[in-house]
Amino acid sequence: MSNTIAASPTVVILEESKYTPVSDATFESSSILDEAMALRQIEGFKLTGGNPHEIIDLLTQLSLHYVKEGKFDKALLSLKDACKLAEITYGQEHSVVAEIMVEMAFINFSQRRFESARTYLEPAIAIYEKNFGLISDQVAFAFHKLAKVYQASGQMQMAEKYCQKALSIYEKTSCPDDEQINAARNDLIKIRQSQ
Image (cartoon, rainbow, N blue to C red; front, side):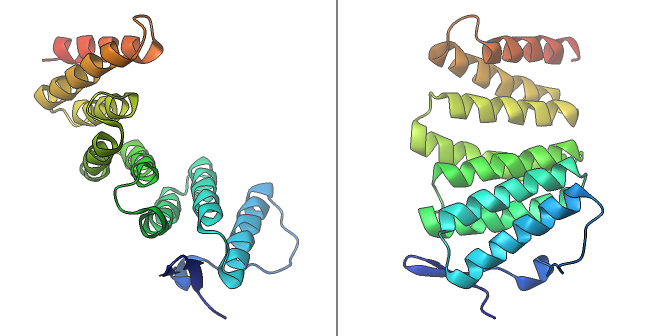
């Protein structure tokens, strides 16, 4: 059984140990069935040299399933595989890579792994800046999330810095009563009050 996925012109190797084979037994839980079906679909793509875009999508969907089930480490593994495949398929500085990094940051943030969350957000910001420019909603969004990470870890000066950057960009890219602008304003007020 081959563990490779053809990704023109490169070949991707996904670690077999991360995906357990599923038997045809009856499942008691629909969540287990959903997981099994997704894993089978990924295995089918791997065996047939499936479209890497579809595999990336399946891996990100599987990570969302794992998050819903509270299996955060499995979700991260699924996203790491998706990120590796996206880097090979699109290049290391593609916006899809940044989007996956932001998702990995969210999971780490939810588990209070703030340093890990930062290690995914910071390169995602650089990728967004390269792809969309310094003034874009994507950059503002990532700065705002980075501010939330710093705020949660008690680093209020850094939180204020990044929240201010996010707000400044949002004010240039969005309408004045936009939900993101209001959220950034409210967060900036909370950060300043806590100092």
